[in-house]
Image 1 (tube, rainbow over the protein chains, first blue to last red):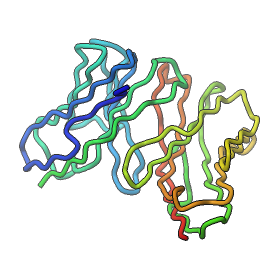
Image 2: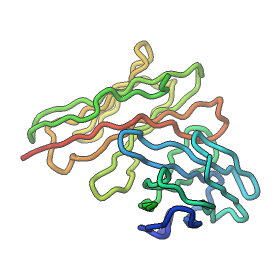
Image 3: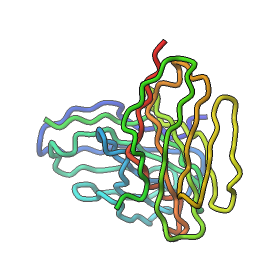
Image 4: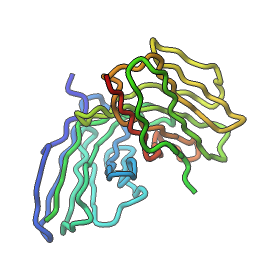
Length: 113
Length: 116
């Protein structure tokens, strides 16, 4: 059981570079989301999707793009990386109904120099 | 205002001590869900428990127990006879029916350090 798979696990970028963080799930979950975790801030929602072709913004969407072309995949794109985007990024998936537990990937640690 | 407040940033205990992690939430929904997640030093997020707003029964799972009190908007987590392996960051989270989906709002987390 793979669950939620995130790649890469670690990445270092230079300011201004672009990058796509990959997320895939094999549980046929409708709902997928991206969070960022910063020290002392908990996890904050970046973007989420309730199904293929449907995405919406979370609490901290600026600087990030997402798309959902399939149920399984939900990539997160940084078009022009900034040092403020240095963080640990988590992808999660669940069934779409309110109250469903989220299943998290192992995270991607991203550093922007 | 924060929707989920974990006022304890860091707690240090000695093994075998009991410890309670506090969580206070804020919502106008009558239907909502509360969660606890554990993040060990290895970094992954582990789901521990879910409680819906209509079920105020306390829950016990081994050394873990949870106390949900709607009157004080709290969902506290107690570890009995703590062990070194309990050292982790613990997050409380809220899912509100008004969001329409399983979106979670997290507290800032409490880091628990259990020393031998």
